[in-house]
Length: 217
Image (cartoon, rainbow, N blue to C red):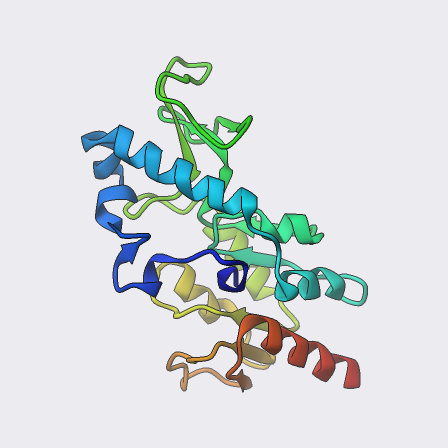
């Protein structure tokens, strides 16, 4: 979803994220082993997010709120949906512009600037870390996301390889009769799902096409 805004995911480079092995920067073990490296890595990613701008797909989804009740579930850790104007957003993997307590993940703090410094502590006295769900950690918003999918009257999947669980399993919660628009230049294998409309385009072009189809109906 955010690729057209210049933000990369680890899947772009076969397990590398901006030149780093994801196991070295995106796991609790990496944080325990080398917190300075992990903190530096996310500080750099945060700077990229703050410079990036929402793309046409972000704005299109926000525009859909004029005619539909739109609920966005995102694996992305940026805040581009918010900046584009969407109002109902469930972040499965956290938001990089917030810090969280290393002791209690429910304690969240907006970041003043673009860095979390080593030595910055939460109210419990533990180091602040990025508000990002790492590999091996629980995904606290997954039940909320599943409930949204169960009630969906229309479902759109944008730019996902369906490779990361539990998020990839959310499609199983969408009722069989619900239209499922899949937008991606390389649509993953989903032949066992019903009522699938495949749109093999980029996020911006694909969301635009979905909007045109919805307006015709």
